[in-house]
Length: 68
Image (cartoon, rainbow, N blue to C red; front, side, top):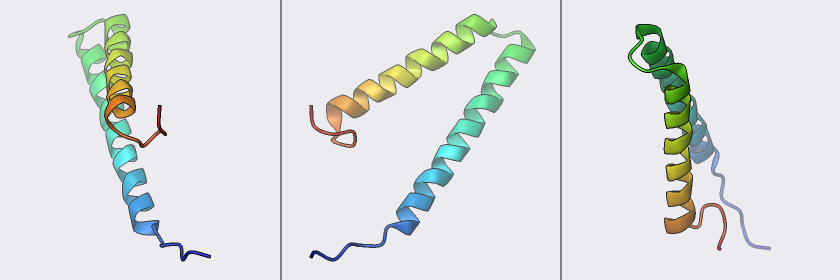
């Protein structure tokens, strides 16, 4: 059997980055909506649009989610 590497540091780093990005996203959205800079529907739509673009880029240019 092939030896498996221990990737605990990579997993922990990825989870930490996810928490930081998620928290920053929520704080930024709260600030945008509370200051009245953007309406809530436009803010939510923009978040979904940007997330969709990122997912499309990941699918197109990497093999992180499998081969298509």
